[in-house]
Image (cartoon, rainbow, N blue to C red; front, side, top):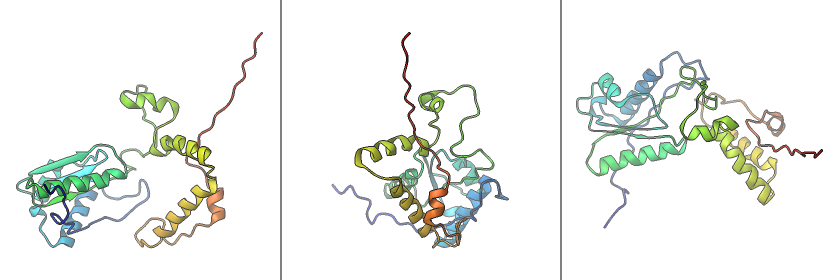
Length: 217
């Protein structure tokens, strides 16, 4: 039995909107989603009305039924959400779209993610509530509110066990900045970063343990 999707589907168009720093987008998040979808359809050479499915990730706020109505889609046959997942969720959403097309659930699926942080809060900020429920109740009270904060503990242990220095993490960051310069649409394009600047920059998060000695009286 052939269980692969290889050759059964293809990515035919890609679209994006202008990138802004937090809070500077002149358009609403939903409008940004529509503009990116229209750009992808134009790149693919198809009408937006030919779309009959949507797949997204990380709890996107743009409802598929609302998108379909705004785009004039007559028959929405498939919609799917990869909850959570962060960056890895994008790959999962593409896999879901490919599976839908390969199995005949849909003919043309748009994979999208719209995010305007200035309009709906910001990643990494703690919830503005006096009550925390669910899985967050085990992490938020202790300061683990973002992927960077959560992974910092694992990375710290990895560095301890294998003798990895802070300079290795700095090299990864600088390499990422270097390759980002090839994207002329990136917010930080044409802004070089040196090793000295990387060393003096503020840490996003770090783990620390304070040892306390109790005295007996």
